[in-house]
Length: 218
Length: 123
Image (cartoon, rainbow over all chains, first blue to last red; front, side, top):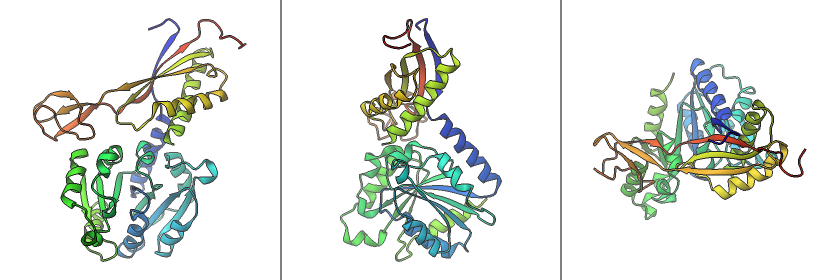
């Protein structure tokens, strides 16, 4: 070590991680199960939430992250979910949410009576995987139209998530997707990953998602 | 794009360390980045060079980037290996998937090196 060198050994994202830990603990203390939904744009995060609400007796809250528009917040609010929209566009168009954004959003949401909180992260499989938002579980969505190779192309998103929800299974007969290969690729990257396959359109497999939520109720 | 947010956190942290250590101008910021992170070094450096201008102690600092290899431990054969098949987390010795990452997730500032003398053109 040079004389004029000072050892630091400090995590670059330690501020984000400290706030994330605080959120994780606060929400657990409040009895709220907090999930961070990540996926490519258009995988069906908002549709999953819209279809979850009628089956969960209105005890959900969602923080929507998008670069622009309040369209998703409007959609989930219509489904009876308490919604708060974050737009990153005016602040440089960040393509992910950080824990401080979620903390600020939570100042605006009354969590009384809320059992489940979702962050619907910005549609992107790269950047959101780098930032801990303090969720109790990261949930990754992938739709059948995206093919089999996403886990291999975006491994970090699959490594930091515990549950993979494969959406739009009603489309399988119209696609060339090899579902066994998709499942195998998921488990090559994250052998412990739980998989739920569902169609929000037909309702097939949706009960497995609802069971997952009920089992994790605090 | 996440490189921008990481660079911002990096310059904030490096500046705080410089202030805590006598507010001397910084020559080098050494960071260690595990292979799991999806960071493009040249993009991070570009953001770093842009954002360091906000901090006079960092304005002549160079970013020194070290990538950390991915190491896994196999719970079946109890051995540690470099994961050359990344992103497939399989033990190269026994082909088990019962593995855990022991190195490669790091993202930290290792050290700061200060100028011995003031850099040219700076007070």
